[in-house]
Length: 555
Image (cartoon, rainbow, N blue to C red):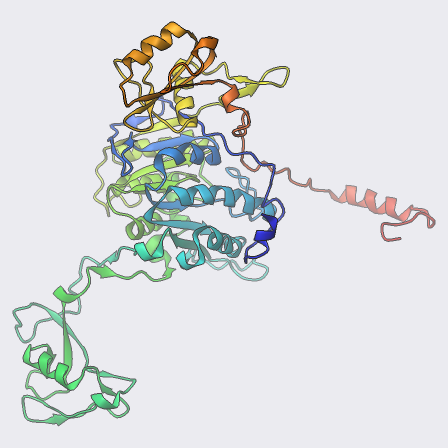
């Protein structure tokens, strides 16, 4: 494997390939009804699995993404993330001051799962500043494929000049855009302004409606398109010197016959091409520079956050208009939008107001103090941010989830055992996820707790599986059905008794499959302590007192 890596161009760093790293544990999600709010709308995903409504998940985002992978792979249309910028500012809500290699490992692990979650026609949008955007671009080239890079958008995050800056006043951030498959993805057009007919007139009362005119010549001449045109008044005109007509002679004749060439009110002017408003695209192709007047800035974002939590303003929020631009270009109503660094909840709020389905993941306590609170106010119809522009009146809902604890944890002897916090339903749901089944208990047959197809089922229990119990289950199984039983103990005669019933013992079947009893994959970096002036003086004094015979580091 190491030899194969030498044969490709890639960004490398310490810890990128950890051969001893175990797979992540696919945790289940447990609803916390205390923070769920509103009326959720359920549906069926493109893969046939259930959509149980908008999701706000509190927990480590790497574990949360792993928990989503099985059910939502290939189902998310638009992913926006605003990860820690690794600036060293160490602001309150994130570990934001991480050595490059650790930051890259953090991002790589998450980007790989996010790539899996994206639909074939989906797109990924990443907010970053200069500190890591270049590294992240190369990393995304590796994960998404360089040919799926779309754009590196410049966002004007502030308009004031920082005259105390040592080198340059930092006034912009980036939004890196990738498509899952660039050949299957195209951004939506930006809507035209309300007064879209500005600049259009209909001076000749053309029945096709208002139009604007443009020149009929081009600056790069084509000799075959240099020919005389006779105006309706009889005047003969040629293209300006150094140019040629925009159209061939035969095409020009067709346009004149179709009244798409205008020669002025008296029919004596230089010809101009008529562009009807009805022929123009329904919107604008996006630029790669987004000004604060169009999409807001940091100041606007903080004002929005202050509107619902004035006592604890999130340090680095994004304005709702910025996310409105992203979701306008990258999604349509009903699509699933995901933000795994939800922060103050902007992406979820905007997605909700724009009629998108959404999944948000946040590790910190502001999942409660910011995200859940903000979404409650959105559902109640708050009028901040983009509400008026979207004619938002409130409605909808979401479910609030916690990550379940690890299924296995260590006892006092260091052995992995089933976590005592798991009840029977949690255990059944977890085992279904581990074994690749969809947890969906049958109302009639207790042993049909989940399915992987129409004919394959799973049953998890801590009870002793007896031969008599197995006979009863087998009688209830259809001829073309199979069953996987996961249990803590079973009678020896049950082993291989029926060809369509497989028995696995837990926790033995789980050992060495993934990393258990590990709850925190965030970056809790220990900062180097500041050394005061007095301490520096003590250090310098000790250096001066060193014996001349004492070797230094470089001797």
